[in-house]
Image 1: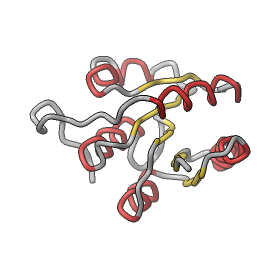
Image 2: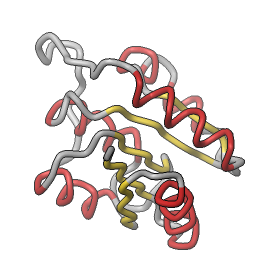
Image 3: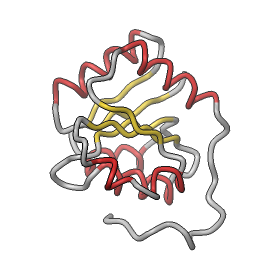
Image 4: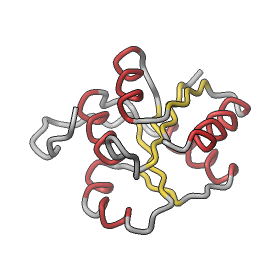
Length: 136
Protein backbone atom coordinates (compact mmCIF):
# COMPACT_ATOMS: atom_id res chain seq x y z
CA UNK A 1 0.00 0.00 0.00
CA UNK A 2 1.38 3.40 -1.00
CA UNK A 3 1.88 5.98 1.77
CA UNK A 4 0.94 9.60 1.13
CA UNK A 5 1.80 12.49 3.43
CA UNK A 6 -0.62 15.45 3.22
CA UNK A 7 0.65 18.77 4.60
CA UNK A 8 -1.56 21.83 4.93
CA UNK A 9 -1.92 24.42 7.67
CA UNK A 10 -5.67 24.38 6.98
CA UNK A 11 -6.58 21.44 9.21
CA UNK A 12 -9.94 20.74 7.56
CA UNK A 13 -8.37 20.62 4.10
CA UNK A 14 -5.52 18.35 5.19
CA UNK A 15 -7.93 16.00 6.95
CA UNK A 16 -10.34 16.01 4.00
CA UNK A 17 -7.64 15.23 1.44
CA UNK A 18 -6.29 12.50 3.68
CA UNK A 19 -9.78 10.96 4.07
CA UNK A 20 -10.31 10.99 0.28
CA UNK A 21 -6.99 9.22 -0.22
CA UNK A 22 -7.71 6.64 2.50
CA UNK A 23 -11.14 5.95 1.02
CA UNK A 24 -9.39 5.31 -2.31
CA UNK A 25 -7.07 2.69 -0.87
CA UNK A 26 -3.98 4.68 0.08
CA UNK A 27 -2.38 4.94 3.49
CA UNK A 28 -2.54 8.66 4.22
CA UNK A 29 -1.14 10.78 7.02
CA UNK A 30 -2.31 14.38 7.55
CA UNK A 31 -0.07 16.93 9.26
CA UNK A 32 -0.50 20.66 9.64
CA UNK A 33 2.95 22.13 9.06
CA UNK A 34 6.30 21.52 7.42
CA UNK A 35 8.11 20.75 10.68
CA UNK A 36 5.64 17.93 11.40
CA UNK A 37 6.09 16.68 7.83
CA UNK A 38 9.87 16.61 8.18
CA UNK A 39 9.52 14.56 11.37
CA UNK A 40 7.29 12.00 9.61
CA UNK A 41 9.73 11.84 6.70
CA UNK A 42 12.58 11.06 9.13
CA UNK A 43 10.55 8.26 10.73
CA UNK A 44 9.12 6.43 7.71
CA UNK A 45 9.13 6.00 3.96
CA UNK A 46 6.61 8.14 2.11
CA UNK A 47 5.79 7.50 -1.54
CA UNK A 48 4.12 10.86 -2.21
CA UNK A 49 4.19 14.22 -0.45
CA UNK A 50 1.19 16.48 -1.10
CA UNK A 51 1.88 19.91 0.36
CA UNK A 52 0.28 23.32 0.41
CA UNK A 53 2.72 25.95 -0.81
CA UNK A 54 1.81 28.89 1.40
CA UNK A 55 2.34 27.88 5.04
CA UNK A 56 3.50 29.96 8.00
CA UNK A 57 6.60 28.05 9.10
CA UNK A 58 8.35 26.66 6.04
CA UNK A 59 6.64 27.04 2.68
CA UNK A 60 5.76 23.98 0.63
CA UNK A 61 8.35 24.74 -2.02
CA UNK A 62 11.13 24.71 0.60
CA UNK A 63 9.67 21.51 2.07
CA UNK A 64 9.62 19.95 -1.39
CA UNK A 65 13.28 20.83 -2.00
CA UNK A 66 14.23 19.47 1.43
CA UNK A 67 12.30 16.28 0.69
CA UNK A 68 13.90 15.89 -2.74
CA UNK A 69 17.38 16.27 -1.24
CA UNK A 70 16.82 13.89 1.68
CA UNK A 71 14.23 11.47 0.28
CA UNK A 72 14.77 11.39 -3.49
CA UNK A 73 12.33 8.52 -4.02
CA UNK A 74 9.41 10.56 -2.67
CA UNK A 75 7.30 12.14 -5.38
CA UNK A 76 6.01 15.69 -4.84
CA UNK A 77 2.63 17.33 -5.49
CA UNK A 78 2.25 20.97 -4.44
CA UNK A 79 -1.14 22.60 -4.02
CA UNK A 80 -2.03 26.26 -3.66
CA UNK A 81 -4.98 28.59 -3.63
CA UNK A 82 -2.74 31.61 -4.12
CA UNK A 83 -2.16 32.95 -7.64
CA UNK A 84 1.24 34.36 -6.58
CA UNK A 85 2.48 30.82 -6.01
CA UNK A 86 3.38 30.41 -9.67
CA UNK A 87 5.97 33.18 -9.30
CA UNK A 88 7.52 31.36 -6.34
CA UNK A 89 7.74 28.16 -8.36
CA UNK A 90 8.96 29.60 -11.67
CA UNK A 91 12.05 27.67 -12.66
CA UNK A 92 11.87 25.41 -9.63
CA UNK A 93 8.88 23.18 -10.21
CA UNK A 94 10.09 22.01 -13.61
CA UNK A 95 13.71 21.68 -12.47
CA UNK A 96 12.72 19.40 -9.59
CA UNK A 97 9.74 17.76 -11.29
CA UNK A 98 7.21 19.06 -8.80
CA UNK A 99 3.58 19.07 -9.86
CA UNK A 100 1.38 22.04 -8.94
CA UNK A 101 -2.42 21.98 -8.62
CA UNK A 102 -4.68 24.91 -7.79
CA UNK A 103 -7.07 24.75 -4.83
CA UNK A 104 -9.83 23.79 -4.61
CA UNK A 105 -9.05 20.39 -6.09
CA UNK A 106 -11.94 18.20 -7.17
CA UNK A 107 -11.42 14.73 -5.64
CA UNK A 108 -11.45 13.02 -9.05
CA UNK A 109 -8.69 15.34 -10.32
CA UNK A 110 -6.64 14.80 -7.15
CA UNK A 111 -6.91 11.02 -7.45
CA UNK A 112 -5.97 11.10 -11.14
CA UNK A 113 -2.81 13.10 -10.34
CA UNK A 114 -1.95 10.86 -7.41
CA UNK A 115 -2.31 7.72 -9.52
CA UNK A 116 -0.20 9.21 -12.31
CA UNK A 117 2.54 10.40 -9.94
CA UNK A 118 2.75 7.08 -8.13
CA UNK A 119 3.04 5.25 -11.46
CA UNK A 120 6.18 7.22 -12.33
CA UNK A 121 9.61 5.93 -11.50
CA UNK A 122 11.05 7.68 -8.45
CA UNK A 123 13.32 10.57 -9.30
CA UNK A 124 16.89 10.46 -8.10
CA UNK A 125 19.00 13.59 -8.15
CA UNK A 126 22.48 13.29 -9.57
CA UNK A 127 24.34 15.29 -6.96
CA UNK A 128 23.23 18.41 -5.14
CA UNK A 129 24.76 21.00 -7.46
CA UNK A 130 21.41 22.23 -8.79
CA UNK A 131 19.44 21.99 -5.56
CA UNK A 132 19.27 25.30 -3.72
CA UNK A 133 19.77 25.35 0.02
CA UNK A 134 16.57 25.02 1.98
CA UNK A 135 15.60 25.52 5.58
CA UNK A 136 15.94 22.44 7.78
